[in-house]
Image 1: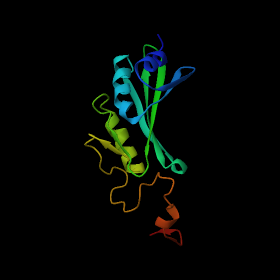
Image 2 (image 1 turned 180 degrees about the vertical axis):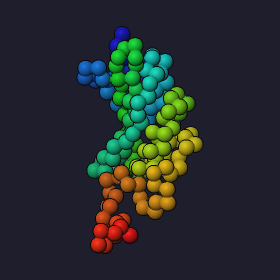
Image 3 (image 1 turned 60 degrees about the horizontal axis):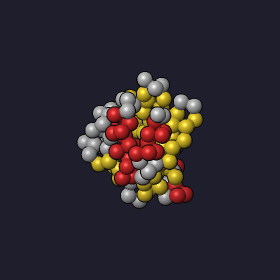
Image 4 (image 1 turned 135 degrees about the horizontal axis):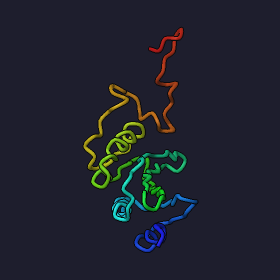
Length: 151
């Protein structure tokens, strides 16, 4: 049975396949359970955890991409969270390398991954502005340029 069929039977998720990639849309309460199931089914390689800012919808889409060497398939699992309070559980108990990916999403978008103890600045140490990958971030407001000198 294909992974999208297994996921659709076990969870209330929307799945679609395009070639070797399965796209899954889930709700926040199933985000980690779907991840555990994927790991159990052989999706042992986490490639990324990241986010998209859907400012017009007042939401972030948080997603992770995993790969199965055996099936040679990829699965992208996404969930939408409220932009005003972007909090979601960490995947670090399933794939340890998620900690760094989540750290970057926390730093660049301001999304909290509950249970991730690495959420501290990496690239923006000393930064006083809002998360720079949010669509409402105005870089002109935070940059003063005079005679080719950044102040």
